[in-house]
Image (cartoon, rainbow, N blue to C red; front, top):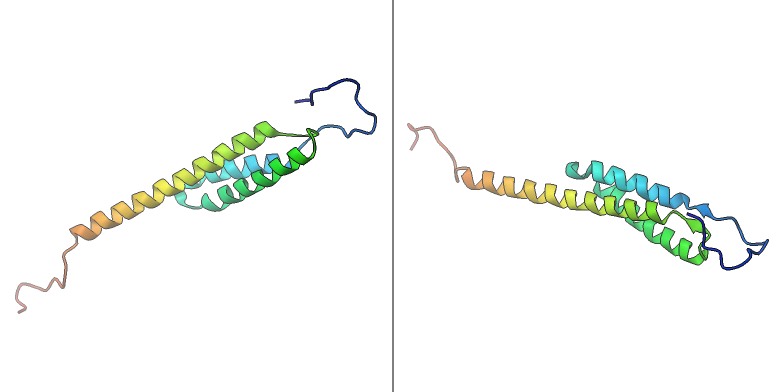
Amino acid sequence: MPVAQHGPRHPLDPEPVRSTKARAVFALGLIGALTGLFIGGVVPSTIALQLARQARREAYASGGFLTGGDWLRRGERLAWAGLVLVAVAVVTAVVIGVVRLAGAPFGHDYAPNVD
């Protein structure tokens, strides 16, 4: 999306360009969301959120000449979705483990002819 123009553009102003970190955030967020249920999504999601913070700071410092805010928002949403899926997978695994542990007999299960 082009930068809003307020009067004539100064000839020394840089051309607006898309942030490369914005695409990286989107790609990592997508990978995190796709692998979230396998608990492997925590690493790309965390990296995506850290890169998103850096990209936002750089876009703010550029004065509007770095674009890609839509890619950043989508990537952040996907990264958060990946982290939520990781949390759901961990909680589900813990609940299944506790239920199985509760159904297991305590102590040793000896044969009926052993005192």
